[in-house]
Image 1: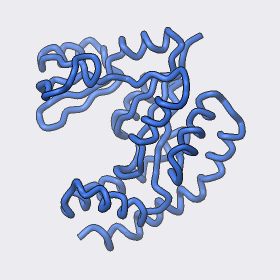
Image 2 (image 1 turned 60 degrees about the vertical axis):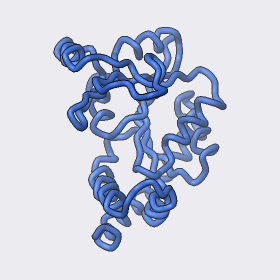
Image 3 (image 1 turned 180 degrees about the vertical axis):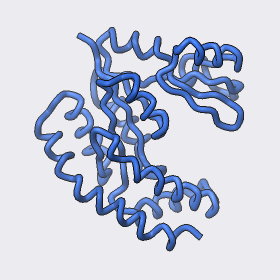
Length: 213
């Protein structure tokens, strides 16, 4: 039996990485997709664990031969999801998780109609801002840039199958597992939050001028 492809995206600071980590550690039958990149390997990184490291020419060859589910270029380096790795995991019955940005998610949606697209948001725009500030890893300018990106991301959330408001990591991971396994209760819970999500989006649009200066 083939596994399912799950694409998880979310606002920066919404907790998507923590949710994916919890899902992998506490639920069975999941595999985390490994991206290919043309950038150089950093100290401590392992081939086939952190990334598949390839040359720029090799990556462009993969693009021309349609060997990627999605890809993007950042700071002159390519990043993308190899089809072969995902296909192998799915054929073994694993549910494969892709934790990627919106542009990549929409590329996957076009190529893989059965993919389950899930977007993670914080409970409110204010809590999103607070989480970004609490991390203490970015400057005010970087936070402002992330908030501008969040506003643009909010405008395409209708492309996602499900939107989860991350009030609690364990609960969010459980809901995702329920969705993947066609649990009607989980699906109903997530579907019922659509109105709350629309309120968050409106809050983002109304508050952006207050927080982004």
